[in-house]
Amino acid sequence: MKKLWIASDHAGFDMKATLKDHLTGLGHEVIDLGPDDDASVDYPDFAKRLGCAVAEANDGLGILLCGTGIGVSIAANKIKGIRAALCRTEHDAQMARNHNNANVICMAARGVQEDVLKRVLAQFLSAEFEGGRHQRRLDKISALE
Image (cartoon, rainbow, N blue to C red):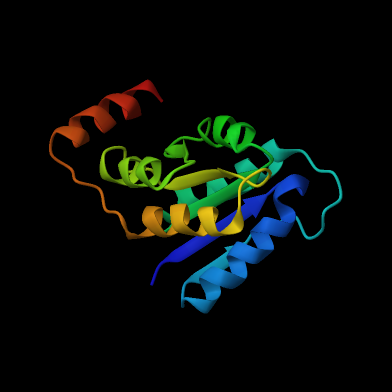
């Protein structure tokens, strides 16, 4: 089982709670970094909180949700050591891990069915970084930081 951090903005609050319960039920350690209710909040604050936790721990993965997944993805990728990927399909999630060694998955909480998000997340959590030629590319991304 994996150590996971999860956070959202107000738009992702309900789906965050659903996914947290689902992942905990599967035996994962899930650390909820907020928010604690669905009152309006600014997504960069929670993307920063989660991104810093994942980068500092250097193990485990992060899950971010907002209305579209776009805002949290942009914000999280500003944090050194974070490779956040907006994933809408199982293929996106697999490639994010296999080729990009993404350590944060960003997902849309609005307009996407719960079962789809669970399948995308399951693919992200089960996929592994392939290394090889992909490591060279990650090294070049790290050099941009």
